[in-house]
Image (cartoon, rainbow, N blue to C red; front, side):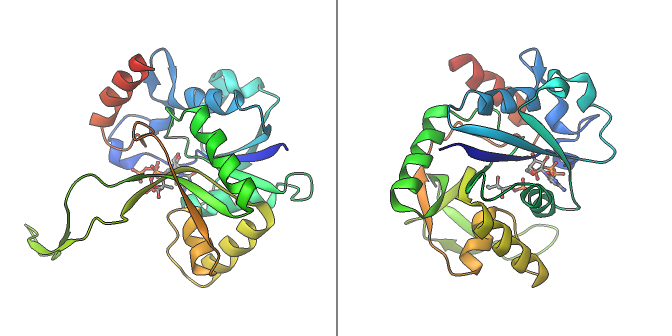
Length: 229
Ligand SMILES: Nc1ccn([C@@H]2O[C@H](COP(=O)(O)OP(=O)(O)OP(=O)(O)O)[C@@H](O)[C@H]2O)c(=O)n1
Ligand SMILES: C[C@](O)(CO)[C@H](O)COP(=O)(O)O
């Protein structure tokens, strides 16, 4: 079955402290966005990609993706969740009953991980996300300023990093996300909306090198991982 893919790429990359949005920074000779879309273009189950871009994006036209027929552009929104919802409203849920949402800032995702996510979710007919178990001891800060102190240690049993792609029935995700945002719920990933609405979300173990390029030091790490692949 072919799936829709939504790639939110309308962010400004503030934490990256770069001269342009991080999805347009160079990684091994092409932009991070071109790497990410290039990965998804390899997916045999790919139907079409809906790419959410900022209205003020002056960079996309200069990429190799501007002429890519598998990419449909949609307008991004104020937050990541708004960008995703804009894309979902553009998808025919009857033509594409399932949708993968994947961050533009995660260029290192492995196709094998995505295919495993698809297989696990289709076999159980439940939505799911790629995730990786936390390895470090986790602390909750007391929020004091200028220097936080430890409030308490958080048990890391069954504590996961949520990654992307996240895979859900298209109409269900669209409706849950729309209702959660209307209710003022803070949504930082698609699974949050399904959880809020009481739907199960599978945790599918994925590779820890599927990093989200977020801070300056992440670029060197991404280069290293890319060389290892
Ligand atoms: N209004 C927004 C904000 C973010 N994103 C996208 O969502 C993904 C994950 O978001 P994040 O890593 O937070 O990217 P930025 O919002 O650009 O980063 P920052 O928070 O540092 O500004 C990125 O691919 C980003 O382009 C989006 O499509 N629309
Ligand atoms: C969707 C996500 O990548 C899962 O970890 C994460 O929530 C995105 O957060 P961001 O602050 O929008 O980068």
